[in-house]
Image (cartoon, rainbow, N blue to C red; front, side, top):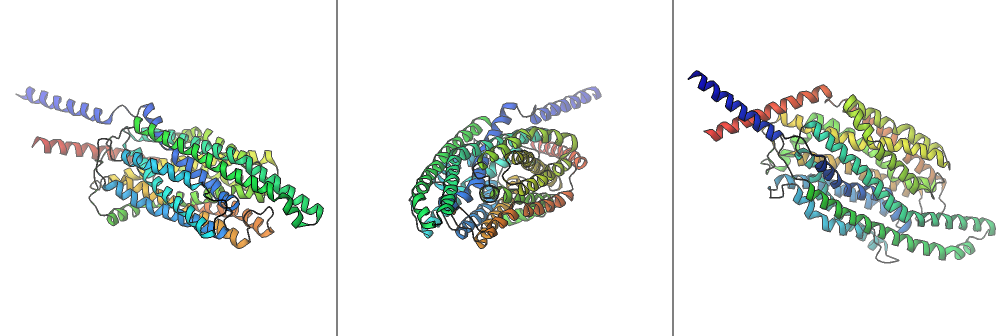
Length: 522
């Protein structure tokens, strides 16, 4: 009798152990990681093409006044930021289908997203009124950003539902960031190389115009002689922007298809992939009141704004302040190649040193790069070396904060085991602060240029404009980056705490499975 009871207990324990192993699984297969990583490429291709080229496109190609450009960039990013928490809540409230809960949002938002991205770079008429031009670009930018939120928020949350443990998630994040850096490089290469030829031609025409004006002493005569070449170059540049948008739109479609075919959602510990039961404001309060989340979000916010201000003014700085207008597209490529290649470096340091230490090292490298670029003028080799340094730091900003966010979500689930399926809200609020910071950086930058007297399409600018570009490119980002590093210093989840969280999470998940098994037995 006693032996039979012992055999039964041994058999039950063995079955439970087999079930736990089956649910935990062998980890995330390499092919699944790659397909997941490819799915992140559209967001980086499109957003970085916008960040690098949208200001100079609106100012020098569309020839919109700086004030209107600042309003479009700021309100567009503000709208984009507002939609993220709303989309996150809508995703959390949506039910699970046979394709999953998150994947359908990604797939259904893609077709109109591709169309809106292409229309964002299309100029319908050679000459548009200021009001028509403003409305055209503002509407398409807002529509695209809304659809990209419907794509990117569920995609970011998908990291928690790939299977495996926290190390597998970190590995998948590393593959994702490597692909996203490659996507940034690819988008910049496509957009930069297609339109860069015409930007270089415009710089050449402007230099000829300035030389002719100085030689003849007659600005009107020189302007008449060179109006036709400048006009032809402008038309070709507009056409080039549209062609690059069509190419990137096609890649957007292909990447979404790879994600849909290669990734299937799996349940995570203490998650059901079901509709959340708490109201929107209640869930939002729970998310933003989680202390580790606040330190991480605001550290990421200030650091991201620092990078985005420098990034958004890079083309204008090279063109008008550094004497490198004919080469800025090549410098962008060099920067992004360095960022792509250095992702494995930060992934290795992340494992050896821990995430918190690695992010301090990675972000600090950006400061000397900005100082060098802002001081040196018309020296391509020095710009290349500084660009490599800046790109290396940029990859740490891509990898580390997104690798730290799942730890914060796990910490929340351990402390609030009854509140499940809030992952989309965590990720959407994270994206919200990043995009809001980007909107502020773009709006403030173009507004500062407006008050400094920037003239759209002009070949030469007042010294106030040059000084403004120099301040926006280096001192302002450095101050913001130092504030971000201070906030990261107070981030409470170090490697010891992270391991404790994983132990508590597995224990809570085991208890939940035991309770579920007992309820089913009863």
